[in-house]
Image (tube, rainbow, N blue to C red):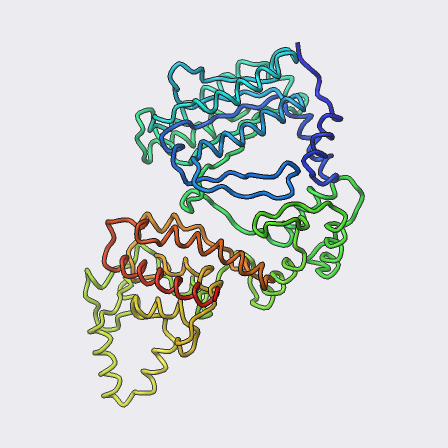
Length: 489
């Protein structure tokens, strides 16, 4: 016995969530086409790591706080609980499948796939069961389980789904690194994973969503929206089939911001976890400042400038063509490409070149060369990052230091070796603090500073660092501590 889908139940739930009314047609269209959902939940050792977050709110959702230090599984369980409740209210047939065995516990849970009378019991059973799942297996055999799911979908009557343009939604929840059945990673396991997605999904009415349970930069691939992409999102989110206009920013950017401001002002305020208060869905003033800044720099939102004004791509050689001075002696002309290899100058090389320039009556040329070239060693790299040009004596504002931290990491920084720890830094957008001031700016900086401390604290950094890496992390820690003290006096 199945309960028919109800647009009125969906509309009631969207109103309960406080979503824009203009989003209903787009959501309703997907709701009507979605035959059922399957969630694949990674329940392995990596999900027990305590680097995740949970929201905590008052009964009316007016104030929401973030709880740090919970496990990835706790965060995923909260997400599953939300979707279980949504499925029960809107009647969305859903399966939840555990990736690994969990003792005597079943690996498959379902809701809204039987009698409506069973929904309350199913909802409570799934929510309670998530608390008792074991997280012991080190294997993450995504490819194996995806193939099982595709076999299950293939065994169903899929022709009616295709005829009605319907689909099955597959949500894969994972920390992001697939393995084989024995927990081994490598090229073969990654290839097998990709083949399971490409080959096994082919010709099936399936839409796949990944929910990554990690903030690791090595796994995530994020980029900011262009203004045209912002417009496309806003049309879908706020205006879907409402007959309201949002002018094209490429044609009339002033009109675009005027329309967007009118649209946002018609919507309810929502809680902003960064500012810890209710704000509009979109900060139009800040978006306008970002667009103005990018236009003045003649660049798209996707390109970043280094701290001294040059595009980082202008002086970043391919990692495969780099040889450090510690392992190879630079020939005359060091600092340039010689026979396809980029050589670094040692300190002795620089002294010799400087003496040569002076003896050739080239003092002025030497000073000009030093001013226009990039940093010549790690110490100078750190100095240029932390101090303002041209004298490099006055410390930069804390917000400038925080957003430019990745410039100290390889391969942009040519004077320090790569390390897995660098990937744990989640970069701030160059526009993160634009338009902020006063107490709101200080609140954002305090949150960002706490994050930098977790990354740089002497007790948190790895023990297998090279001397250059140790120098870098120690210097960053001391500089950011000093800047924070100056900011929050």
